[in-house]
Image (cartoon, rainbow, N blue to C red; front, top):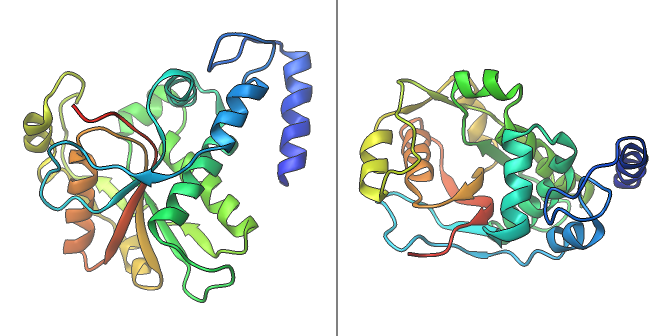
Length: 232
């Protein structure tokens, strides 16, 4: 679906199902004009945690995590505000292009590998938010004549504890050896491999994902996220 059609659909649904903006709480749209403009005006930048874990690839973020951006990501991820995927995906696409600058019409595709959600989390939410954002980003890239596709090759091979409240060292211990690569990993030798996620905090999840992909023979060039928390 073209971006103009999506915008028209959003406007129609906002009229039929009026709601306050998920970003600022004002207006009568799921995402008001100023908050949408904030996402559209993203200026991707390199984002590096204060104490990066070993093996963390270079990470590029579209936006800082906070305020309206934080609220939009939480609404999409936890409250099923699925119409936020296109604008968030376009922001993610900008971070992808910053991470691996390629020209339109390049021969080798960008292969976006989303961070996997645990099966129980996907069931509880009713969708896989990171994969949805990755697909929206890939669509935006293809719209700019940059070949891109999503390869959801990562999977959990053991249970992990909830990351909330864990410091950087505890997150690394919690995630060590938690991810593996399924048979779709064979497709990752045909293009430029990038990890994608909605958010980077300590970088522990991305470092573990890069380890699993590297051990499976993939060359991870970088990671791209919608937002990055401030260094602490």
